[in-house]
Image (tube, rainbow, N blue to C red; front, side):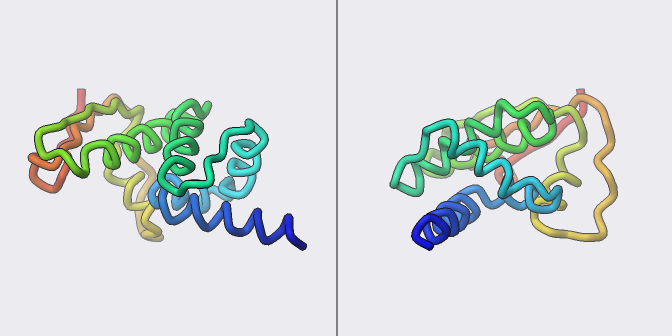
Length: 134
C-alpha cells in the first residue's frame, strides 16, 4: 500500500511540474510507463522542481523526436520564466503549435505537419515564444 501511495505522489508531482510533457504522454498512453522508466533510472529528487527538471531531461532524450522536442521546450520555458532577457532555441521535427494544443488536451487538433521548425522561447517575445519553419 505504501509503495502505491509513493507511486501516486510521484506521478502527481511530475504531472503538476511537467504540464505539457505529461499531457502529451498521457494522450499517447505513455505517461505512467515513462515515469516508471524514469524512476528505474535512479534519479528522483524529493524536491518538485528538481524532480521535474530531471524528468524533463530524461524525456528530452526520448526516441520519439516530438516528445523530446516538447521536453526541451518545457525545460526552456522553466529556464526563461524568471529572466526577461534570457532566450532559448528548440528545434522541432514538426509544427509545434498542434503538439502544444494536444498536450493541453484539445481533442479537435489535427496531426502536426512534418518539417523542420525552430522555436525561440523568452519572456521578451510576444506570447513568450516565436516559431518559424526552416
